[in-house]
Length: 331
Image (cartoon, rainbow, N blue to C red; front, side, top):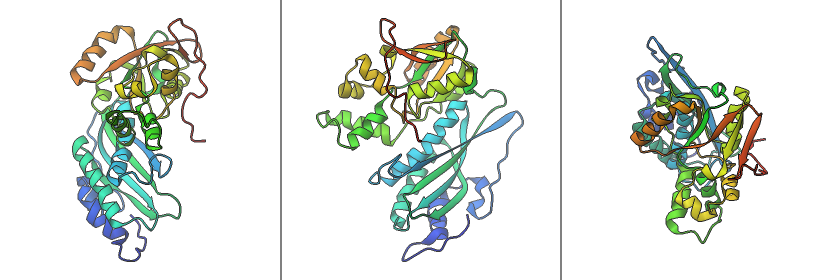
Protein backbone atom coordinates (compact mmCIF):
# COMPACT_ATOMS: atom_id res chain seq x y z
CA UNK A 1 0.00 0.00 0.00
CA UNK A 2 1.72 3.25 -1.05
CA UNK A 3 2.10 5.91 1.62
CA UNK A 4 0.18 9.13 2.06
CA UNK A 5 1.06 11.51 4.83
CA UNK A 6 -1.29 11.56 7.83
CA UNK A 7 -2.52 14.77 9.42
CA UNK A 8 -3.13 16.03 12.93
CA UNK A 9 -3.45 13.38 15.62
CA UNK A 10 -4.48 10.69 13.17
CA UNK A 11 -2.53 7.45 13.08
CA UNK A 12 -1.94 8.11 9.38
CA UNK A 13 -2.11 5.58 6.59
CA UNK A 14 0.53 3.11 7.80
CA UNK A 15 -0.56 3.43 11.39
CA UNK A 16 -4.13 2.61 10.44
CA UNK A 17 -2.97 -0.33 8.34
CA UNK A 18 -0.83 -1.74 11.15
CA UNK A 19 -3.43 -1.27 13.87
CA UNK A 20 -6.74 -1.97 12.14
CA UNK A 21 -6.14 -3.99 8.97
CA UNK A 22 -2.96 -6.08 9.46
CA UNK A 23 -4.77 -8.22 12.08
CA UNK A 24 -7.29 -9.14 9.37
CA UNK A 25 -4.65 -10.39 6.91
CA UNK A 26 -4.56 -14.04 5.89
CA UNK A 27 -1.28 -15.96 5.42
CA UNK A 28 -1.04 -14.90 1.79
CA UNK A 29 -1.35 -11.27 2.84
CA UNK A 30 2.18 -11.31 4.33
CA UNK A 31 1.09 -8.99 7.18
CA UNK A 32 0.30 -6.34 4.52
CA UNK A 33 4.00 -5.43 4.37
CA UNK A 34 4.76 -6.33 0.75
CA UNK A 35 3.69 -5.06 -2.67
CA UNK A 36 1.46 -8.03 -3.50
CA UNK A 37 -0.17 -11.07 -1.93
CA UNK A 38 0.49 -14.73 -2.69
CA UNK A 39 -2.29 -17.27 -3.33
CA UNK A 40 -1.89 -21.01 -3.73
CA UNK A 41 -4.43 -22.70 -6.00
CA UNK A 42 -4.79 -26.45 -6.15
CA UNK A 43 -5.05 -28.47 -9.37
CA UNK A 44 -8.57 -28.75 -10.74
CA UNK A 45 -9.77 -25.50 -9.20
CA UNK A 46 -10.27 -22.02 -10.61
CA UNK A 47 -10.31 -18.65 -8.88
CA UNK A 48 -13.34 -16.41 -9.33
CA UNK A 49 -12.55 -12.71 -8.90
CA UNK A 50 -15.02 -9.85 -8.58
CA UNK A 51 -14.89 -6.17 -7.58
CA UNK A 52 -17.56 -3.78 -6.38
CA UNK A 53 -17.40 -0.24 -5.01
CA UNK A 54 -19.80 1.64 -2.77
CA UNK A 55 -20.00 5.44 -2.51
CA UNK A 56 -21.19 7.51 0.42
CA UNK A 57 -24.53 9.10 -0.41
CA UNK A 58 -25.18 6.61 -3.23
CA UNK A 59 -24.91 3.12 -1.75
CA UNK A 60 -24.97 4.01 1.92
CA UNK A 61 -25.94 7.02 3.99
CA UNK A 62 -23.37 9.25 5.77
CA UNK A 63 -24.93 8.42 9.15
CA UNK A 64 -24.83 4.66 8.66
CA UNK A 65 -22.69 2.85 11.28
CA UNK A 66 -19.19 2.22 9.87
CA UNK A 67 -19.19 -1.43 10.96
CA UNK A 68 -22.34 -2.04 8.91
CA UNK A 69 -20.90 -0.16 5.93
CA UNK A 70 -17.89 -2.50 6.02
CA UNK A 71 -20.05 -5.58 6.26
CA UNK A 72 -22.25 -4.44 3.38
CA UNK A 73 -19.17 -3.77 1.24
CA UNK A 74 -17.85 -7.27 1.87
CA UNK A 75 -21.20 -8.97 1.48
CA UNK A 76 -22.16 -7.46 -1.87
CA UNK A 77 -18.91 -8.87 -3.25
CA UNK A 78 -19.44 -12.27 -1.65
CA UNK A 79 -22.86 -12.27 -3.33
CA UNK A 80 -21.16 -11.97 -6.72
CA UNK A 81 -18.99 -14.99 -5.91
CA UNK A 82 -22.07 -16.94 -4.83
CA UNK A 83 -23.71 -16.07 -8.15
CA UNK A 84 -20.86 -17.84 -9.96
CA UNK A 85 -21.04 -20.85 -7.65
CA UNK A 86 -17.73 -20.00 -5.95
CA UNK A 87 -16.85 -20.26 -2.28
CA UNK A 88 -15.22 -17.09 -0.88
CA UNK A 89 -11.60 -17.15 0.30
CA UNK A 90 -9.88 -13.75 0.19
CA UNK A 91 -10.38 -10.07 -0.53
CA UNK A 92 -8.49 -6.88 -1.33
CA UNK A 93 -9.65 -3.52 0.02
CA UNK A 94 -9.23 0.02 -1.32
CA UNK A 95 -10.47 3.03 0.63
CA UNK A 96 -10.66 6.64 -0.58
CA UNK A 97 -11.60 8.58 2.55
CA UNK A 98 -12.03 12.29 3.26
CA UNK A 99 -9.35 13.62 5.60
CA UNK A 100 -11.89 14.30 8.35
CA UNK A 101 -12.63 10.58 8.76
CA UNK A 102 -11.37 9.71 12.24
CA UNK A 103 -9.34 6.77 13.50
CA UNK A 104 -12.39 5.73 15.54
CA UNK A 105 -14.46 5.48 12.32
CA UNK A 106 -11.76 3.34 10.71
CA UNK A 107 -11.52 1.16 13.83
CA UNK A 108 -15.26 0.49 13.75
CA UNK A 109 -15.09 -0.17 9.99
CA UNK A 110 -12.29 -2.71 10.51
CA UNK A 111 -14.21 -4.34 13.35
CA UNK A 112 -17.14 -4.88 10.99
CA UNK A 113 -14.84 -6.53 8.46
CA UNK A 114 -13.40 -8.73 11.19
CA UNK A 115 -16.84 -9.90 12.26
CA UNK A 116 -17.80 -10.96 8.75
CA UNK A 117 -14.39 -12.47 8.04
CA UNK A 118 -15.10 -14.91 10.84
CA UNK A 119 -18.66 -15.49 9.63
CA UNK A 120 -17.73 -16.23 6.01
CA UNK A 121 -14.22 -17.66 6.38
CA UNK A 122 -12.37 -15.04 4.32
CA UNK A 123 -9.18 -13.07 4.91
CA UNK A 124 -7.74 -9.75 3.79
CA UNK A 125 -4.75 -9.85 1.42
CA UNK A 126 -3.99 -6.16 0.90
CA UNK A 127 -5.17 -3.17 -1.11
CA UNK A 128 -4.68 0.59 -0.97
CA UNK A 129 -5.76 3.65 0.99
CA UNK A 130 -5.91 7.21 -0.32
CA UNK A 131 -7.42 10.55 0.68
CA UNK A 132 -10.17 12.26 -1.31
CA UNK A 133 -11.83 15.66 -1.33
CA UNK A 134 -15.09 14.06 -2.43
CA UNK A 135 -17.37 11.55 -0.75
CA UNK A 136 -15.86 8.35 0.60
CA UNK A 137 -15.42 5.59 -1.99
CA UNK A 138 -14.86 2.04 -0.76
CA UNK A 139 -13.86 -0.70 -3.18
CA UNK A 140 -13.38 -4.39 -2.51
CA UNK A 141 -12.12 -7.21 -4.70
CA UNK A 142 -13.25 -10.66 -3.60
CA UNK A 143 -11.60 -13.92 -4.60
CA UNK A 144 -13.37 -17.26 -4.48
CA UNK A 145 -12.60 -20.83 -5.48
CA UNK A 146 -14.57 -23.40 -7.43
CA UNK A 147 -14.01 -26.63 -9.31
CA UNK A 148 -12.80 -25.85 -12.81
CA UNK A 149 -15.69 -25.89 -15.25
CA UNK A 150 -18.39 -25.75 -12.56
CA UNK A 151 -19.00 -22.01 -12.78
CA UNK A 152 -22.56 -20.77 -13.40
CA UNK A 153 -22.61 -17.97 -15.95
CA UNK A 154 -25.31 -15.62 -17.17
CA UNK A 155 -25.28 -17.03 -20.68
CA UNK A 156 -26.65 -20.55 -20.15
CA UNK A 157 -30.41 -20.01 -19.83
CA UNK A 158 -32.53 -22.05 -22.24
CA UNK A 159 -36.11 -21.74 -23.46
CA UNK A 160 -38.26 -23.90 -21.20
CA UNK A 161 -36.16 -23.31 -18.08
CA UNK A 162 -37.94 -22.32 -14.92
CA UNK A 163 -36.90 -19.02 -13.27
CA UNK A 164 -36.23 -19.08 -9.52
CA UNK A 165 -35.24 -16.52 -6.91
CA UNK A 166 -34.07 -16.97 -3.33
CA UNK A 167 -35.40 -15.08 -0.32
CA UNK A 168 -37.66 -12.07 -0.74
CA UNK A 169 -37.62 -9.13 -3.12
CA UNK A 170 -37.83 -5.36 -2.56
CA UNK A 171 -36.94 -5.21 1.13
CA UNK A 172 -33.71 -3.26 0.70
CA UNK A 173 -35.29 -0.61 -1.50
CA UNK A 174 -38.05 -0.17 1.05
CA UNK A 175 -35.46 -0.03 3.82
CA UNK A 176 -33.75 2.90 2.13
CA UNK A 177 -37.12 4.62 1.80
CA UNK A 178 -37.73 4.08 5.53
CA UNK A 179 -34.36 5.68 6.35
CA UNK A 180 -35.41 8.66 4.26
CA UNK A 181 -38.64 9.07 6.23
CA UNK A 182 -41.16 7.01 4.27
CA UNK A 183 -43.76 4.67 5.81
CA UNK A 184 -43.92 6.36 9.23
CA UNK A 185 -47.09 4.39 10.01
CA UNK A 186 -45.31 1.04 9.63
CA UNK A 187 -44.84 -1.05 12.78
CA UNK A 188 -41.41 -0.66 14.38
CA UNK A 189 -40.46 -4.30 13.82
CA UNK A 190 -41.24 -4.05 10.12
CA UNK A 191 -39.30 -0.80 9.79
CA UNK A 192 -36.30 -2.40 11.53
CA UNK A 193 -36.47 -5.50 9.31
CA UNK A 194 -36.48 -3.44 6.10
CA UNK A 195 -33.64 -1.17 7.25
CA UNK A 196 -31.54 -4.20 8.16
CA UNK A 197 -32.07 -5.67 4.70
CA UNK A 198 -30.76 -2.43 3.18
CA UNK A 199 -27.79 -2.05 5.49
CA UNK A 200 -26.86 -5.71 5.87
CA UNK A 201 -27.56 -7.92 2.83
CA UNK A 202 -27.39 -11.70 3.16
CA UNK A 203 -25.10 -13.15 0.46
CA UNK A 204 -26.26 -16.66 -0.41
CA UNK A 205 -22.80 -18.19 -0.12
CA UNK A 206 -24.11 -21.66 0.77
CA UNK A 207 -26.75 -21.76 -1.94
CA UNK A 208 -24.61 -20.61 -4.87
CA UNK A 209 -22.07 -23.48 -4.93
CA UNK A 210 -24.81 -26.06 -4.39
CA UNK A 211 -26.54 -24.94 -7.57
CA UNK A 212 -23.48 -25.78 -9.68
CA UNK A 213 -25.07 -28.82 -11.33
CA UNK A 214 -28.65 -27.54 -11.26
CA UNK A 215 -28.73 -23.98 -12.60
CA UNK A 216 -28.11 -23.19 -16.27
CA UNK A 217 -27.61 -19.46 -15.62
CA UNK A 218 -27.46 -17.28 -12.52
CA UNK A 219 -26.69 -13.83 -11.13
CA UNK A 220 -27.42 -11.89 -7.98
CA UNK A 221 -30.13 -9.24 -7.77
CA UNK A 222 -28.35 -5.92 -7.32
CA UNK A 223 -30.02 -3.48 -9.73
CA UNK A 224 -33.51 -5.00 -9.48
CA UNK A 225 -35.00 -8.41 -10.29
CA UNK A 226 -36.38 -7.37 -13.69
CA UNK A 227 -33.26 -5.46 -14.77
CA UNK A 228 -30.94 -8.26 -13.70
CA UNK A 229 -33.06 -10.95 -15.34
CA UNK A 230 -32.82 -8.88 -18.52
CA UNK A 231 -29.02 -9.25 -18.28
CA UNK A 232 -29.41 -13.04 -18.20
CA UNK A 233 -31.79 -12.97 -21.14
CA UNK A 234 -29.49 -10.76 -23.19
CA UNK A 235 -26.44 -12.92 -22.46
CA UNK A 236 -28.37 -16.11 -23.23
CA UNK A 237 -30.27 -14.88 -26.28
CA UNK A 238 -33.64 -15.67 -24.71
CA UNK A 239 -36.61 -13.92 -23.06
CA UNK A 240 -38.53 -14.38 -19.81
CA UNK A 241 -42.13 -14.46 -18.63
CA UNK A 242 -42.49 -13.56 -14.92
CA UNK A 243 -45.69 -13.90 -12.91
CA UNK A 244 -46.08 -10.84 -10.66
CA UNK A 245 -48.08 -12.78 -8.07
CA UNK A 246 -45.17 -15.22 -7.65
CA UNK A 247 -42.58 -12.55 -6.73
CA UNK A 248 -41.86 -13.41 -3.07
CA UNK A 249 -42.46 -10.68 -0.48
CA UNK A 250 -41.53 -10.47 3.18
CA UNK A 251 -44.16 -9.72 5.82
CA UNK A 252 -42.56 -6.29 6.27
CA UNK A 253 -42.77 -5.46 2.56
CA UNK A 254 -46.37 -6.64 2.36
CA UNK A 255 -47.24 -4.48 5.36
CA UNK A 256 -45.59 -1.47 3.71
CA UNK A 257 -47.02 -1.66 0.19
CA UNK A 258 -49.54 -4.49 0.08
CA UNK A 259 -49.45 -7.66 -2.01
CA UNK A 260 -51.13 -6.54 -5.23
CA UNK A 261 -49.52 -6.97 -8.63
CA UNK A 262 -48.76 -3.24 -8.91
CA UNK A 263 -46.84 -3.33 -5.63
CA UNK A 264 -44.96 -6.46 -6.69
CA UNK A 265 -44.10 -4.85 -10.02
CA UNK A 266 -42.62 -1.88 -8.16
CA UNK A 267 -40.63 -4.08 -5.78
CA UNK A 268 -39.33 -6.20 -8.68
CA UNK A 269 -37.60 -3.08 -10.01
CA UNK A 270 -35.88 -2.20 -6.73
CA UNK A 271 -32.21 -3.00 -6.19
CA UNK A 272 -29.88 -4.09 -3.38
CA UNK A 273 -31.65 -7.39 -2.66
CA UNK A 274 -28.57 -9.56 -3.29
CA UNK A 275 -30.69 -12.66 -3.70
CA UNK A 276 -29.77 -15.30 -6.28
CA UNK A 277 -31.83 -15.34 -9.48
CA UNK A 278 -31.37 -18.39 -11.67
CA UNK A 279 -32.74 -20.49 -14.51
CA UNK A 280 -32.94 -24.27 -14.28
CA UNK A 281 -34.55 -27.11 -16.20
CA UNK A 282 -38.04 -28.13 -14.98
CA UNK A 283 -36.82 -31.58 -14.00
CA UNK A 284 -34.59 -30.03 -11.31
CA UNK A 285 -37.61 -28.72 -9.37
CA UNK A 286 -37.61 -31.49 -6.77
CA UNK A 287 -33.86 -31.09 -6.17
CA UNK A 288 -34.22 -27.33 -5.76
CA UNK A 289 -37.07 -27.78 -3.31
CA UNK A 290 -34.97 -30.22 -1.28
CA UNK A 291 -32.08 -27.77 -1.32
CA UNK A 292 -34.40 -25.00 -0.13
CA UNK A 293 -35.53 -27.16 2.78
CA UNK A 294 -32.00 -28.22 3.74
CA UNK A 295 -30.81 -24.59 3.84
CA UNK A 296 -34.03 -23.33 5.49
CA UNK A 297 -34.07 -20.72 2.72
CA UNK A 298 -37.14 -20.02 0.58
CA UNK A 299 -36.46 -20.44 -3.15
CA UNK A 300 -39.47 -19.51 -5.26
CA UNK A 301 -40.31 -20.33 -8.90
CA UNK A 302 -41.47 -17.07 -10.47
CA UNK A 303 -41.72 -17.72 -14.20
CA UNK A 304 -40.21 -19.24 -17.34
CA UNK A 305 -37.53 -18.64 -19.92
CA UNK A 306 -38.88 -18.47 -23.47
CA UNK A 307 -37.65 -17.55 -26.93
CA UNK A 308 -39.33 -14.10 -27.14
CA UNK A 309 -36.78 -11.36 -26.50
CA UNK A 310 -37.23 -9.25 -23.38
CA UNK A 311 -38.60 -9.67 -19.87
CA UNK A 312 -42.38 -9.54 -19.42
CA UNK A 313 -44.10 -9.19 -16.05
CA UNK A 314 -47.67 -10.50 -16.24
CA UNK A 315 -50.75 -10.60 -14.00
CA UNK A 316 -52.94 -13.60 -13.20
CA UNK A 317 -54.69 -13.33 -16.56
CA UNK A 318 -51.42 -13.36 -18.48
CA UNK A 319 -51.72 -9.64 -19.31
CA UNK A 320 -48.42 -7.79 -19.39
CA UNK A 321 -48.03 -5.20 -16.63
CA UNK A 322 -46.49 -1.91 -17.78
CA UNK A 323 -43.26 -1.20 -15.88
CA UNK A 324 -41.94 2.37 -15.85
CA UNK A 325 -38.43 1.29 -14.87
CA UNK A 326 -36.89 -2.18 -14.89
CA UNK A 327 -34.40 -1.28 -12.16
CA UNK A 328 -31.63 0.99 -10.95
CA UNK A 329 -29.28 2.59 -13.46
CA UNK A 330 -25.99 4.25 -12.51
CA UNK A 331 -25.91 6.45 -15.61
